[in-house]
Image (tube, rainbow, N blue to C red):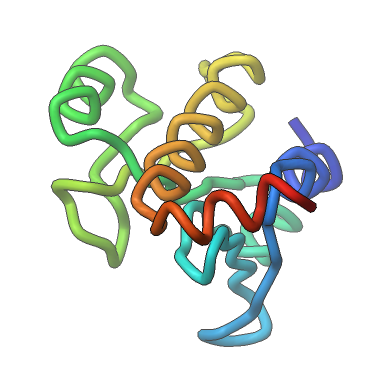
Amino acid sequence: MNLELFYEYCLSKQGVTEHFPFDEDTIVFKVGGKMFALSSLKKWEEGTPSVNLKCDPDRGEELRAQYDDIVPGWHMSKVHWNTVKINNDLPDNMVKELIDHSYELVFKSLTKKMREEMSKL
């Protein structure tokens, strides 16, 4: 997976916006004003990309035990976030599945009104 594919995949989701709230390096994707994915652009340029993604706590533990490229979220809640190393052993479809899972968790946490408004877009 390259940066362009990652970027386009995240932005293709309903109601997603991109931000740089921390610095010029860390791109953050949000839905309803809540983060679901963030990544260092510099790491992509260096060839060592990773992305922080929200994850169900039980599933997160299972994934960390199963894959060396999924670790507790760097600079995030270790219970609810994973750091996923990209372009190592995880196939792109698995990375996409984890992006989908993160998006869905955040989308479902939004108010019914917010979800309905995004459905109209």
